[in-house]
Length: 105
Image (cartoon, rainbow, N blue to C red; front, top):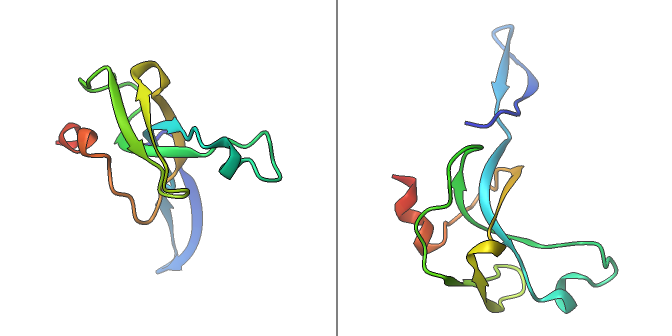
């Protein structure tokens, strides 16, 4: 569960509802800079790989993994050192990378 929790004031029988809106994910930065940097050279598009927490180590993976960007459609190979932990807003429709599905159980 995420450490950052935002309060949303919802009038449900007079109580405040606490809703976590951010969580940790393993991610890589898309290497297709030409597509993602249009108009903003400082932007890095993060590709989410799998859910994690603030303390877990990276699951056992091969030396390189192939990852396809959901935004530009390009596929690139990433080394383990390029995989990072990222705290982001939880996406509505997230499908983990096949190598990270086993680590959820």
